[in-house]
Image 1 (cartoon, rainbow, N blue to C red):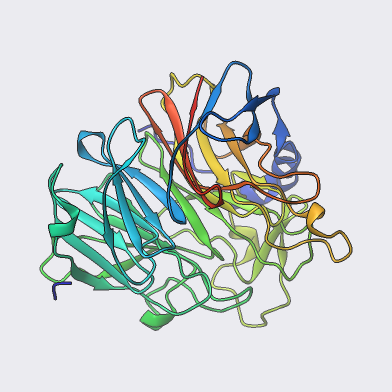
Image 2 (cartoon, helix red, strand yellow; image 1 turned 90 degrees about the vertical axis):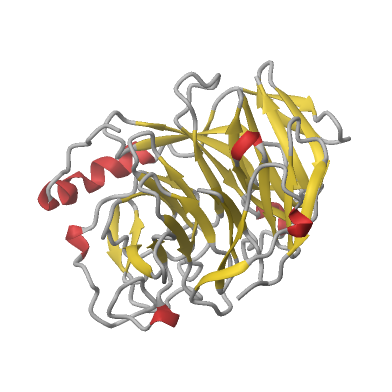
Length: 392
């Protein structure tokens, strides 16, 4: 209706034995490289960036979320404000925008169509570069499991030509799961795939066991990585947020298991039988501090100036320590990830900070990330909301 390298697969026994060792490796997560306070061009704010780098506020936007780069270097940015933006280089102004209901969190251009993921629908419109967004007619491709509680839907085009969508469960301990034996409306907490060329496209399960996966990124070898927002019911310091390597059919614990202190631990918030035993779960690639709220995720080319493999936006926690006040909130930032040769382990380092004052007040909260033509771009969906660029 209108509207690249094969990585060695470790055995289950090996994964279980490696748990404590990997926990020690990942304890370095969050370490900071040398950052320098600097003024933000186009703003009265200051931030912390790598020495010699320049951070620029390019354009103000309303509640922008995830970023994608389309044909002819067009940039598409979804929002929480019922708008989809298009920007053209040098991305200092909005070239076009269209109103879309249902929380258009992310969008991609794929094989002649502009696809948009809303909370309960995948939409598309025939598209070519420079086409007037005001003139496009969106149609529904397929329904998505809707409902409140983690209502964002992250969309990505995979190297196999299929579309992939990530969606979170409701709350901390919902038994919702991406699986064929679960009712469609409860297929949440993971990633589903869809072949858009079929006459009647249908979603099929891809990975499950994630509370709220938002960042999706494909490695040069065609492997999907996801960051995951963990639950709140274990307190303010546990469990950590996760970066996982997601392979077809993989299960990542939620809500039956939480990765904590370098091992999978059974969560007593749910008493049903887990779909996969804990000793069969692969460890995460890396961790972020509890309640960091990792958002956008992207791979970088090998020749990037910061010698990093991946970048993630850290939104910062909404919650505070019970007696700590706003100053105890987890600060927003941009982090980089360096992967081991096998792509199964990683360490995290700070890349951009200074968004939160000592009293907890924030002037920006990074959300979406993209790398293009030697520069890192990111959105902030609150404070001085808009698009930012980091150049070396």
